[in-house]
Length: 188
Image (cartoon, rainbow, N blue to C red):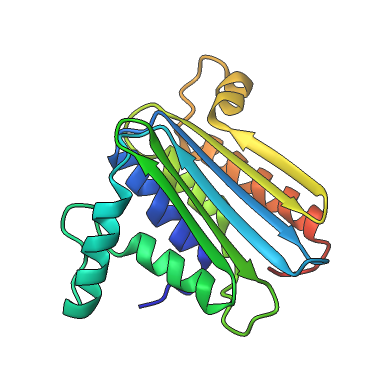
């Protein structure tokens, strides 16, 4: 199974962070056309898990066609396979009680590299999740970038409830406009 956009992989991994009780989720997307790389990194301070157990479960699950039972599902495996299929790499570090860090590196010009997709919708979906948590998104392409966080959003909107239609619209427009300015009609 493959997801058609990398933003869907990112959303899946970040939702795992939410389920793990993370109060801080950091998502960064870095594109370097000179080195032909797209790097996605997701970090959280959630409950973490035992990577060795996860890898054993995944190996067994691959032969049975089942998702790992204890560690969640197939999201990490799909993320890993999608990066490696392009000739890129995947790094996973997690420790119970200390959170998780996932890093996927894609080769941009690989015919197997899916498009990044709609990160504005991904960020909006994450902030609408139940509970209060800090979510930070940074985007950088060839040395130009921007960032947005739930903390900044709360500062901008002050005491008014910020999980509403107008705020979500503002956030999505901010991410889309800044991404378009940086990408200069290039599509990743």
